[in-house]
Image (tube, one colour):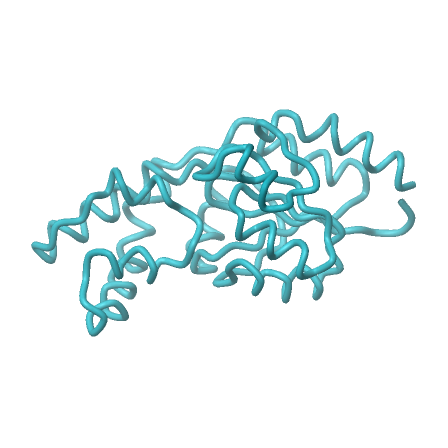
Amino acid sequence: MTGPFTVGFDLDMTLIDSRPGIKAVYDRLAAETGVFIDSDLAVTRLGPPLDEELAYWFPADRIAAMGERYRALYPEHAIRPTPAMPGAIEAVAAVRAAGGRPLVVTAKYGPNARLHLDHVGIEADLRGWLWAEAKAEALIEFGASVYVGDHVGDIRGAHAAGALSVAVATGPCSAAELRAAGADIVLDDLTEFPEWFADYSSAAA
């Protein structure tokens, strides 16, 4: 692998286990509005944009306002309870150690995503509010050759950018679903990434 290179990562359920924090925000939103939100169910399908989940619980004419309120509640209620996923910090460090540039591309609102990265101690470039194929915009902008994610939407984004899709079975999609969706590499979790990346970067050098 010659010259600087970029490896992209998804955020929720790839680099961070955002379920406790997101559940806390949904519970707070439900308490404020009096609208029932099954937060336990909601956190089993993380990945797509927030508006898609809010549409299960609110009428269309309230989704924009509820999204704004959710994002306002998020910093106070979601950051502290959210840990890094096993192997996440080491995976990003492996990219830096090889001379690469880590990039986080997420459907999450960018300022809140940055709070998460700061909280768990991950330094990376960041692009937010991009989902599925739209993630290719940032991957192409930064010249990413690899994109790591946990959702079939992440696979579509990687392929739309001409990047290698590395999938981790730590989110709502099983390893079988990720393979069926066309992931080039499927790992159980990010603890396997440094060894895989060492082999990949050596072969590409």
